[in-house]
Structures are given as structure tokens and as C-alpha cells.
Image (cartoon, rainbow, N blue to C red; front, top):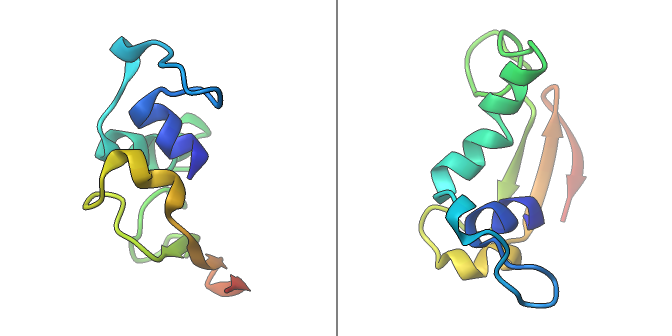
Length: 91
């Protein structure tokens, strides 16, 4: 969630805005760590989006990052982590 927040808000740990012109919206930040990351590693045929035939790697969050105040992205909790269809972590 820190990566997501840093892309959207561009705020350092000390509270300074770093490169405000490089901020992206939440959807583009989500794509950068999912489907775009899979494309970068030439894994878009098996990862990066939820589709039949792809690996079921995803997380279940306690809040929808598209519907909350972007400044609250760091407060989102991971409820469950699923990799290749198997639960690896459950809160």
C-alpha cells in the first residue's frame, strides 16, 4: 500500500511532496503494480489481471482504494493474500 500511496500522493516519509508533477491517479497506480508490471516482465499471458487461465495471484483489501481519500491509501489493510489460487495469508 506504501507503493500505491507514494505513486498517488508523492509524499515522502518526512511529509514533503516529492515531484508533484509525477502524481498518478489511483487506477493508473494500481495498473502499474498489476497488469503493467506483468507486461514489463513478459508475464502478461499468465499474470497481472484476473482472467480465465491466468494465475490467481491477488489480495483482498479491507477498503476499496478507488473509493477512499487518496491520502488514506496507507491505512488499507490486507485481509488475505492468494497466490496461484491458494491462501498464503489471512488476517
